[in-house]
Image 1 (tube, helix red, strand yellow):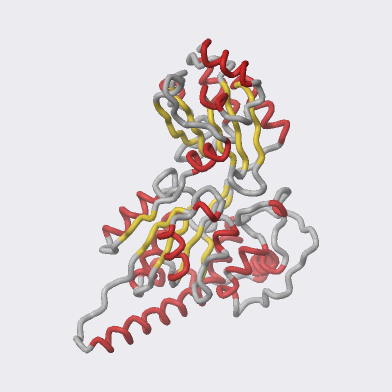
Image 2 (image 1 turned 30 degrees about the horizontal axis):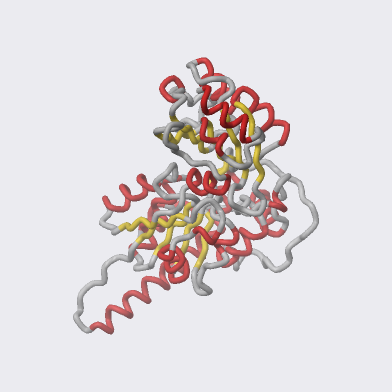
Length: 373
């Protein structure tokens, strides 16, 4: 099976006492981030994460003895990540064997002697955070899956819907810490599918909007695995609706454009598209653009977008922890910094923002703005 072969090095990997203690300390004393207590999502070393994934560490540590006291945030070295994977590998192998035997048993009962085919992989979008925005198909799959590989921006409320017999595996990525590389995620999906499991890959928003779903589909289909995509409400649509912002509006914005705030290799200036994106008749929605917002705003204005263009930045949109900043484009980055917004934050730029009932200008001023541009 792919996981066993591709990650075989971990099975003989010697976990040093120092690194073992680092990993188990993360489990017994989950890392606290500045904003963790109010986060609706899975923080990388949160108590919720290890509670959900506790089956992976059964032989290493008793997870019932959690500490509720504040804890410091150590650096995430590559050795901690590698040792964490090494600790998980025995239980992953056990699960693969159980699934394989289950499939062989079911095939044997059919009496036709044919070899069973692989299981299916479902890429499921969970929307921007509000569990009530899930589709019916998504809910059904979440409840019947054998194993679910979930990202950081799948909300805790959504994960509460997972069936009682399912196994959860965190594969989230944050800036500076990838619990699994994309290649490792590919191999995990393939391994469980080859074992005959119903595999659900849970992604925040929509799987095919900045979710790397296309890469996973391409890899799995090349290996002969059937992949089905269950769309989710992408953050642009969900959050804009929450704020009463029409992404397009007759006479105001005739198109909408989704941008990523990060380059593929994590560069600090990925906004090479700003020259073509500075269109006053279009709406811009920027994903993952919190750290590059000052550069983006400046570049858009340099390429002709008016400095007084209405804009909004929304942290943790559609969840009870949602926070918003409304401002004109030239002031947005400063106000976001003042409010100390954190990831995930979605940025919406365009005249349509002034149509929101939450826009700080009065209705009369907003109407004048629409007429002036």
